[in-house]
Length: 81
Image 1 (cartoon, helix red, strand yellow):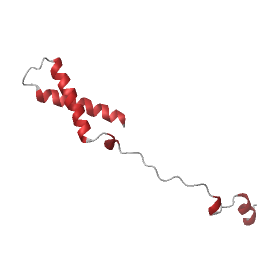
Image 2 (image 1 turned 90 degrees about the vertical axis):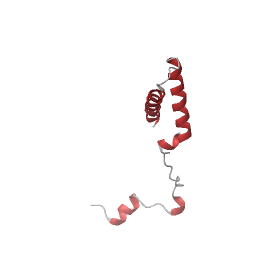
Image 3 (image 1 turned 120 degrees about the horizontal axis):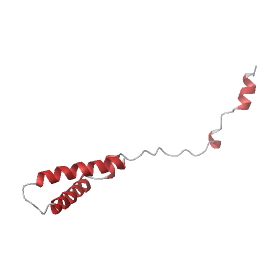
Image 4 (image 1 turned 45 degrees about the vertical axis):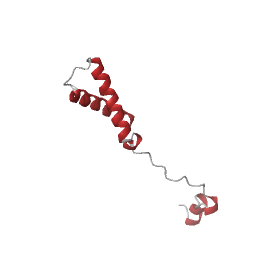
């Protein structure tokens, strides 16, 4: 059996001046903070524009283009997380 004094010699606590420098807490950025709302909206608008362009800018499909673009951008941003 190991005595208490032997155990203390085997694994002594380091003195404060012998302890390695502690790294500051580094939290990972919230994925929602990676892209601002303005950047997200700009990506959606650009994607919706290109969808409309591919359709020949046929009127009456603006909302459909926007919703499809929004789903596409949100899927891409979710993968970035």
